[in-house]
Image 1: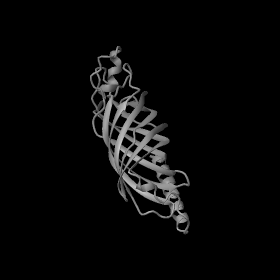
Image 2 (image 1 turned 60 degrees about the horizontal axis):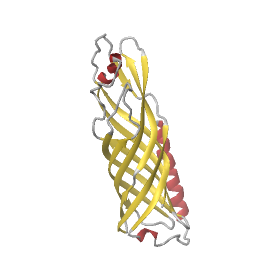
Image 3 (image 1 turned 60 degrees about the vertical axis):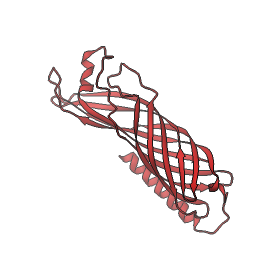
Image 4 (image 1 turned 180 degrees about the vertical axis):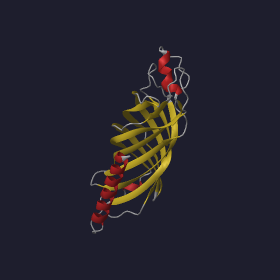
Length: 236
């Protein structure tokens, strides 16, 4: 994904810049901030939602064979809170409930005549990740870190009647990198995370569809799993 590459390049450039800047010896801001038993914060940023689609290639009663793909990616908005528990000088346990506002679209192509149909899948997720954060040694006022863990998610924007309908609950694992910058009165951390859903979230039984012809889109897919890239600024 072009968006993913750009985000990774930005993060690397920012971390390299902070690392180079921090090589100069200077007074440390908030020298004891990392030793609090627990602390709170919030984060804001943007994300890109993705779906991993598994086509089954089964023909519909009228002979159509549809294949689905994600044609493009549109950024969404993310906002959440941070709860951080101190484990030792290099490890923290973090709970970060976050709401992701966004949507996705799926492009269906008819294998025989090339006809294309775009189906919108709107999703507003409440995600609750539990991560283990592992930090490096502090370099003056900068401290890179990595993190990883598991998450559960609930779709708050789910409505019946759409051509494609996803299940309300999802779960998976995630990992990411970031860099804490110690400001005089707070900590700022640009962070990027990659989320991978594990279960099939497609609703295959669709009695809610009034138009039987719309079931062709559900029947064309055997499995759908979620993926997401999230870039946030953490304020702690």
